Length: 624
Image (cartoon, rainbow, N blue to C red):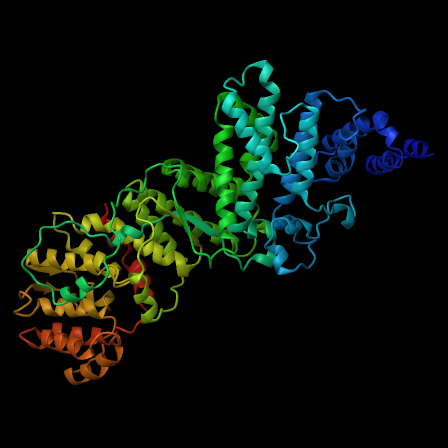
C-alpha cells in the first residue's frame, strides 16, 4: 500500500518522505529502495538548483536515508560510492553547524545564554529548512552524527580502526600513526589508508576550526543574541616594547634615577624577534577574556596539526583539495579567519597580509542588508589591527602606524584607570621572555588601544633613539611612553640622556600631550643649573596651549598637590618642580609648566587618542 501511494505522488519531497516511512517500517526494503531513494534526493537537489547544501533534499538524504543504507550490510556499495555519500554528509553537517546568523535570525527561538556559548548546544537553536517543518529541521549533535557515519564508512571501506574509537580525536590519532609507517600514499595498495588519513584529518580539522572560531568570534555563528560578545584577536605580543636602547651615556644624573633603580626592571628582549617561524609559540590569553581558554587553545593546536598532516605529502594535499573544491571552502569566512590566525602563529606575516586582504574581499561579497549592525565596522577594526601587527613584524613601520592611525578613528578612549591599577603591572614578573609570543586580545578599545600605542612606540623607537638626531620622533616617543607608566621609565631616562648629549631639545607639541608628572619634573630639572641648563624649545611660536588657564605660582601649589600619587612623597615632587620653574627660567616656560601640572589628572587615554588623531601627518612623516 505504501509503495502504491508513493507511485501516485508526484511531489519529490512528499514521495521521498513516504518511501522513508516504508524503509523504516520494513527494513528489508532498504536493499531494494534505499540507494534509489538516496540518488533521487541528490538528483532533485541538483534539479532544484539549491544554493546551499543545507536544504530539504540533502537533509532527508543525510539524516534519514544514508544511515539506513550504510548500516544495512546487505546493501552492497562500492567504496567510491561510499566516499561520495560521506562527502555529501560532511558537507551538509559542516554547513549546518556553521550557518551564519543572517540565515536563521528570522526563525530562531529563545535559548538560554549558557547554551549559546556551547558549540554543541548551539546547533539545537530553532532553525527551519525551507520545505521542512520546524521539528524536521532540528538536528541534535550534528558532529556526533557525522562521526557515526564516518565510523561506519571507515569500517566498510576497511580502514585500520581500533575497536575503542569513540570520537574524532581517536580517528586523528590513528591517522597520524598511519603516516608514520606509510611513506608512499601514491601506491595503489595504500589508497584506502590515504583515504582514511585524509577524511579523518579533514573532519577533525573542520570540527576544531569551528570550535576555535565559535569561541573567538561567536557572532559569526550564534546570531543576534550574542552581538554583545566581541571577537578575540590573535596578535604578536610586543611586551618588550619598553626594552632599553643602548646609547652612550652622558654625565647627566637624573633626579629620579634612584627611584627608577629601586623599581623592578621590565622585560628586555630583541625588538625584531617577532618574525621567527615556530611550531611551539606560546599564546597568552587572559582567563577573564574567554570562558574556556584551554579548550580554545587546544582546538587551535589540533586544527593546525591537521592542516600540517593534510599537506604532509603531495598525495594527501591533492586529495584534500579534491574534497574542498566542490564545497567551495574558499568562500567560508570562518575558515579564512582561522587560516589567517594560523599563518600569523607560524610567523608568515606576508601570507597573513595576503590572507587578510582575501578576508576583506569575502566580507565585501556579502550583501549589506545581511550585515548585522556594527558587524562590518568590527570586522574592519579586526583587519586593521592584524594588518598593523603583521606590517610591524615585517619591519614595515610606516605601514604599521598607518593602519593603527586608521584604527584610531574607530576607537573610543577607555576610562582612566586608578593609579593602583597602573602601578601593579610593573611589579609582576613576566612569565614569558621570548619576543615571539602571541596573545589573544578582545577586540575592544579597552584592549586594542593600549596595544596600538605600544605598536606605535615600538615603530618609532628605533628612529627616535638612532644616532641621527630627530627631536620630533623622540618627542613622539616620549608622549607614547606615558602609557602604562612607569613601565617605560627606563626608556624615558634614555631619552633624557640623549637630550643631555644633544644639549638642546625642540618639540612644540610638548605641552599639548605631556601630562605625566614625573616627566614634567624631569624636564623642569633640565632647565636648572644642576640639570645642565639644557636649552628646551617646547612652546609653539603662536603660544597657543590646549588649556590656557592663567594660573599663578600661588595657584600652582593648590593645583599640584591633589593630583600627586599618594605613594610618593608630595613635598619632594612639589619642591623639585617649583624649584625647576622658579630658578632662572623664562616666564613663558614657567607659566606653561604651571598650567601643565593642573592637567596631570586628565584621562591619559583621551590625551593620547587626540595625539594620534591630530598628529597623524607628523607621525607618518617620522617613519618615511
